[in-house]
Length: 337
Image (cartoon, rainbow, N blue to C red; front, side):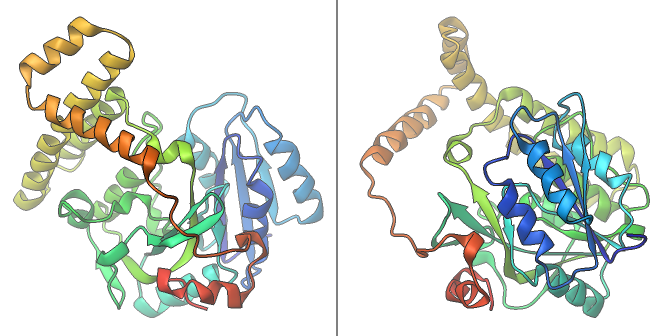
């Protein structure tokens, strides 16, 4: 396909279990003028075989492989270099999108005259939509709103983590922008911030056309201290890469850096305890006695989870088999029919 309307980038690592459903949800889009750039990051499961089999039946799917695992940023960059579409959309290889998502995002972006458009994410847990949980939650507004670099850098304490958004971006507006490959956590957040600082214009829709799969492991995952230190390093790099930042943005970055020190201290303590480095853990506590109360809170929360009843399921059918009417049934989550 010479110049598709949308190039869908799907980075993958060992997602064979959910891959067929994810790919099919893209191939089944009402906007058929698309290409899927499936970029595998040296998976050890059957991912590549599955993708290649689908590609033999639908040439819109292109399979890109790598001999070395380098992280999601590198996988996406490999796909970016081959994208030909007017728009670039990211869909994870274990997620599911509404049959009209791409068409609706393109239409909304053109109407808003914006360079990038994102929608809310509805959480998919154990293959079920539970309790209408979405990324935006109660922060979701009734009309589209414009996002700025400050929206990402200086959110309020209870604001949703917008770095998880799966934005669709006009390829010409990227101006050569790529993902940082030296980080594996927060690469999307950094990408959006730099896109906006480079002059890009981005809007967020209140609707959700995206089912974001959250695995049991991801729900309990904790950041490693190295991940937080990388986030701090990336943020510091913004100050040198963009010397003309406003005083407000510089103050926001300084505040965010300070805010990251607390989780860094706690995760350092937690890592020392996991590795049975008791001496270092005691030293952490002596330097910051407040860590004791937070550690106690985490332990207590784990105990409570053992006795907490399983929340009722809001849907009873497999999302991969949903009709437009099924999508409408979860409209309380922000997914319209």
